Length: 222
Image 1: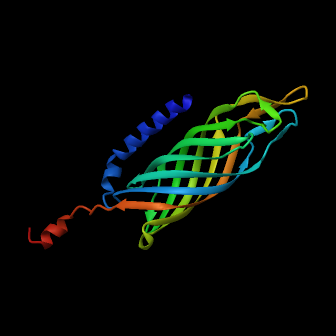
Image 2: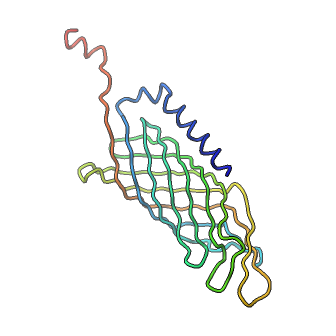
Image 3: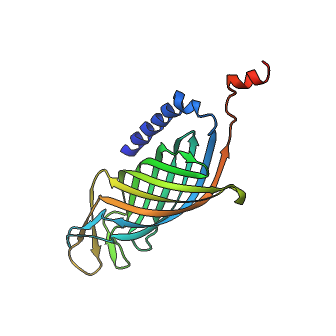
């Protein structure tokens, strides 16, 4: 899939940023990693019934997990989220994230780009219908704005929120036939989605002491 090429480019960009002098100079921030679970209501227009001429299931929910590692103010990680469909209409997203994550005290603010692939499962399916394909994958790009608070006294407990938006990079058409009836309903896949997520997780930071200044050496009589 084209998303593999996008992810490779993303990893290369992360490596360049992390090896830059600005990243190496932020010694006091050190390294950190977080693991969050989150849930979100989502507005979605990425499934459109061609027969009815309108979007299907504009409101849905999702749950997911995300991990982020930071070096200084820069961050990168991955995300997996979605929701199951018992008879059809399931969704899963797998992506990578990278961007800026400055810290002010115990607060973190995040501006992240996102890229990955979205899976549509048994679109329009139900107990009495048969979809033409079981899975369809579309690449996507997106962005996330977020904030989080770390409570070190509670074992590095982290609480935060994200606002995110995604745009599918292509389109696909699938159909669904109901048992005992003639004809099929066609669906166009691809569009926008956006949501607001509540995050709960754990964060671990490794602090590195800042390098000593010339004044420190003078005060020590060196």
